[in-house]
Amino acid sequence: MPDYSSSYRTLATNVVHAGSPSPRIQGAVVTPLFQSANYLMADESAYDTVRYIRLSNSPSHLGLHARLAAIESGEAALVTASGMAAISAAILAFVGSGEHLLAQRTLYGGTQTFLDQDGPRLDISHTAIDLADPEGPAAWERALRPETRLMLLEAISNPLMEVGDLEAAVDFAKTHDLVTVIDSTFASPVNFRPREIGVDLVVHSATKYLNGHSDIVAGAVIGSAEQIDRIRHLLVHLGGSLDPHACFLFERGLKTLVLRVQRQNETAMRLARYLADRPEVRKVNYPGLEDDPSHAFAARLFSGFGGMLSFYAASAARADRFLDSVRIPLHAPSLGGVESLVVRPSRSSHLGLDEESRQRLGITDDLVRVSVGIEDADELIADFGQALAG
Image 1 (cartoon, rainbow, N blue to C red):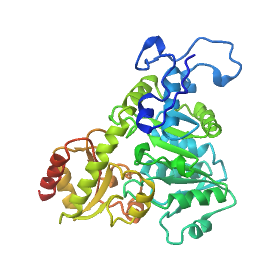
Image 2 (cartoon, one colour; image 1 turned 180 degrees about the vertical axis):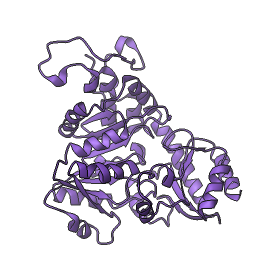
Image 3 (tube, rainbow, N blue to C red; image 1 turned 45 degrees about the vertical axis):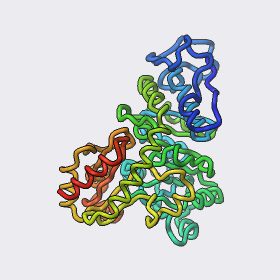
Image 4 (tube, rainbow, N blue to C red; image 1 turned 120 degrees about the vertical axis):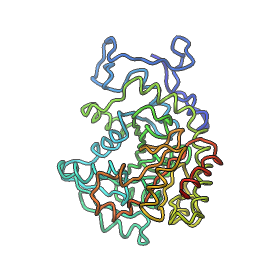
């Protein structure tokens, strides 16, 4: 069995080399694809050591787990069949029937729907908290219950790009013995590594920045060896394992993560500043802007502000015209790929919420979310200009 424990000093080197098998399998520079559902028995003494694809222990999985742990400062990692498989397994591994969790006020629509619709069926309740509440921990304290077990956070919220006081949230959770789970998809490890401020479990929709090429659906969760083992046991029964071919594409995309995100950071900042000066735009949501309510928190924690932004057009009709007129970005859901994408969250990621909930959260029909790709920045900005003027 090869050794997958290699790790390096810097993120840029780890995304390329951490977790690579040693010795290299048959001398292959790129980790081969092991498209096999099962493996020969070898006197295994425990079920978890049986080599079977549903147990996420094929050679295609093991090196990827080690690489993810290295880049997110974790002891262990687990890849899953989707980002929702990762976040739902992380929650269910630590919150059971009759128990409760605190959840950040604005969450990805799929996560919010899981809490709202599946939570009650499983007898799991939640209370929304605002990480930017001026009262801070005093307000969160009022939401606590004796049965509260977990605090669910997002590094950058979807789709309003809010960044809260994550350090205070981690301190609060530790004081009250709560497990912290953070969805860090929008930030990516290039801009923020939550384990380094004390977060227990980091979750990614690897479909987005980690893979970066819009050609797989995958998830990842990183944390301590004990916590990941607990999630793995649950995932084995839920069946949310990742196919080896997706593992292969995931690892390939991960190697260019630093280069892609650095370019996306730069272009998104330029685009946000441009949009903020356009008369057709009512408001831009981007934590890199100095007047953004989240800027102080983001500037303290992040090394870059990400490739995601959103803006309120002057009207829903103006948003419609923009989406019809833009040429370079594709009008499609998802995010984090090499191509720029635009979408209306009220008709995509948050369509599962009722109209009243969307209005309360500020996810209105004039809101457009932008995932910045790696195209030429000047050409992309010019295209936004002509689409807004149309």
